[in-house]
Length: 345
Ligand SMILES: NC(=O)c1ccc[n+]([C@@H]2O[C@H](COP(=O)([O-])OP(=O)(O)OC[C@H]3O[C@@H](n4cnc5c(N)ncnc54)[C@H](O)[C@@H]3O)[C@@H](O)[C@H]2O)c1
Image (cartoon, rainbow, N blue to C red; front, side, top):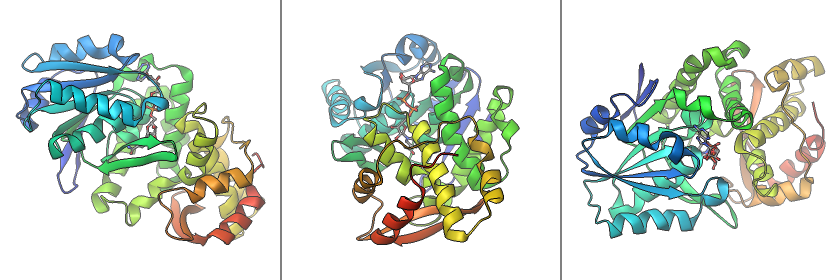
């Protein structure tokens, strides 16, 4: 078992272990909840609900099951959870537990942030992506038809409990999606190597990613400064994700976004072709091609919530382990995107 302390304004632990063993003890230590709404999705419920419930014998559990996939990261799902808590007379002492991937974590987290102006939230991520990223750091929310994550709140969990065995039931595509998100950490830190991605090193890999994320969010909880580097590949990645109608997974799109950012960085800093190709080592084997027009991508980027007036911050890479926040005007970004989009590695 490993523990990482996230030192945000409301500090909390991330517990990484095999199985849900002793989850009840950890929940009891951080929350006075009697009732817990366990928000999960239709795929995760039959796989893990009973095992989780066995460890939470001292609490009254209320399962809330929503559909699976990005289309359920919606205002409707959010209201379903809120209505459920209200109908079952949840008080401010009670809690919401998110058992699932990033979709469940984000929507359940947002419900916990809003219900009675905030009740305890416990994150139990079940995908690789949610274990290494979305269950830590407190970004919660839902998508609107106008864009991804457009309605949400910063709301830190009271506990994140990662049962690493859950990852064993993911299909190859979901593993690849989590790996895609994990590649972001390799580019940011410089201390994650290709062998860290091997299945036999998975628990250490999760630890390294969570440790790095926790360090960054502890310095900049609200995304005003250094936390922005965690958006590496995401501005273009989110645009592609929306344009694909969410048929591409989040991690698949992040990989495409990072590839474009390396091309853009090469152009911006004037790298040699050799350096650029060397930097792309982590991306080998992934489909990095973007099959949308620059115009469509630009339109999505313009709707991005991280845009400031006509300025947009992109995270470029001076090298592996050397991210830099660079501010572009709309016209600069247009010109630079035309130079790189549509090329594959
Ligand atoms: N809040 C944040 O900081 C943050 C960071 C990164 C990504 N995200 C968000 O996370 C979401 C993507 O998360 P995701 O990739 O986990 O997707 P997801 O939640 O849609 O899960 C992917 C699929 O795996 C299934 N699944 C989950 N756990 C399983 C298991 N153990 N075994 C078998 N199947 C399982 C789900 O039912 C779903 O079909 C996106 O909405 C993205 O925006 C949020």
